[in-house]
Length: 373
Image 1 (cartoon, rainbow, N blue to C red):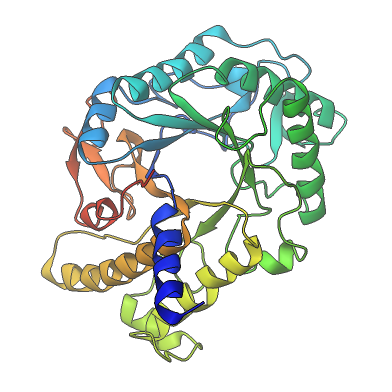
Image 2 (image 1 turned 135 degrees about the horizontal axis):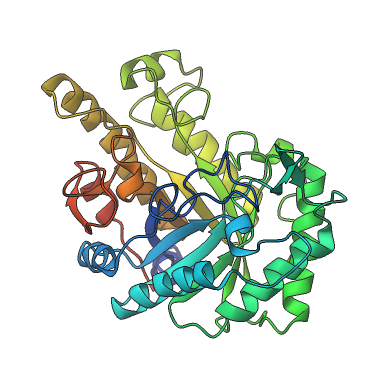
């Protein structure tokens, strides 16, 4: 093939890529560290889902997908029963309806970290998937019940199996999620390209990009056009997303040489970590379920630093565009007000009920890299 024909073919392949972009909408996971099946908390206080106006606002900003988090204990009152708590199921269906009414879709995902919590003799007990109290079969039954509810819902794009399953070992994560996938497919889920819904498969621990190939050295462990593998990517040195240090400090302390990149932080985040994940995926679809840059306020000193983070953010998303990677940015929603990752907030800020109506400065950079279908 000539260089000219090869270049044309390459451009066509890039043009053919499709990917989803959007936002993680916080609220449904609220109070997750105290939740049990008998103490779910109070709706509107411990947890909350956004009103339809928030979806209209996000759609107006160009977003096409929202990741909605929830707690299994609030949806299923018993670990051994797949009977829904009807009010919580309706709340999730409402989120899908709000999305569909505004030309969007949702991903529904439990925030349980690989476990289901019960109360034993007054003490909160964490029961990881595969334990006696929360067996693999019980988890599978919950996921099958939910998938059956979601598969024909036009407002749903995918079922996420779990957010950051750190209660499971790396090997357990692969085994547990494979079993759940088999159960969902066995209940009638379509595995053909473009048909049915997608299943978002979590990678282990905190789903971090930086040690992905160490945790899962054989790469994606389950095949199928219905599967998308989830990774999370925060760019501070410990990959926690706390962003304690400034951009300049992070760049100075990065051991990776800049090479052809603008600085060392670009080289580590994009050249080493993101490109490493692309290699790990070996052609399988990826979903960056969480990523984000800090915004500590509106003071001039902080705005100068935010410009540096936004420059990296733009380059990062451009690489995601080239590779056809799906992504949802962390975070928006009434319950996320005051966090350094806040992208959109309501007015009055920090209150339950009012729709999102205010964009933070880093939001525009994310909006410049929208969904491509």
